[in-house]
Length: 383
Ligand code: SF4
Ligand code: SF4
Image 1 (cartoon, rainbow, N blue to C red):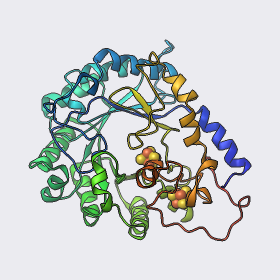
Image 2: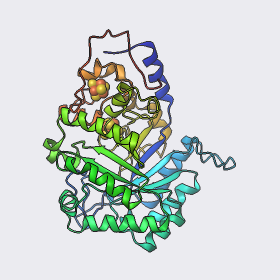
Image 3: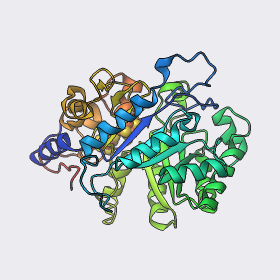
């Protein structure tokens, strides 16, 4: 167990921390059947019950509760400052499947929240993009899992998915809507990563976000497609090189070891700006049933917003589960003795998926601790 004074301070600070980004799963409906889908999204016709999706009113009450906690809905005069205003990622399933999506986005925007949306793109056209802009969406993310139709469509298990997302990106660019490209990386598409980044640049994306596969939801079936630790380590170093050189912004999500790699490489300008796992700290997730989670991949509820009367603050600050996840001194296995645990944290969801222990070691990590003492060189999130 690694635990020094600096880390304890970091842990205590994180308990008070308000989330800067919250993903809100507004639906599980989706016309695709992606192999890696953590949401296990289903077509609308597949026997959905009313508990598969919250009502418009429930969604609004959740947004209001977040805004109240973050202080954006305090009635104070609006400022241009982004400080304190969390980003809300409307996600799914495919959020565009909801007919009230514009109403919800407008409502969140009027509460002072920064509204963005993650989409597969198949419902994006000139009309919908204009409505999204008017409602107040600040940016979109498009999922693109291959640089060819063959790879992307196979991943999405839907013919025409590649053409649809390329068309959506072109429409977004024409409309002046900022967008990023999200790619879930595993053995299936590892050889296409450089090609996808090039494609993202050509399409006009401002950012390429590399998601490292977490085998949950439908992704459980492709758990053996996770990169082996050596290949993963090479990828992280390649991504670091690209981040330093590339004209496009490059991020890594759910690959918290990237923060460790940046720290090890002593790239000063990246230290502190590249985060490890933010789940349950700066990042939160709300499920299609109103459960508050650390993230969408760790399917454990910290509390339900419908059942507790829409009190986000109470769950975020009071949940024993969240406190446990935030406390890196309780991590086990390799992560528990790692000098970089406060920088990286390991992926709690991958640990849970692969070993049923969310405090256990992240199985994709290759890092081997040098001879080190527990008290000597511990690093923490704020360094
Ligand atoms: S637990 Fe894993 S999947 Fe969840 S936010 Fe952290 S790194 Fe990402
Ligand atoms: S051992 Fe765990 S905490 Fe350390 S770098 Fe690897 S995943 Fe991160």
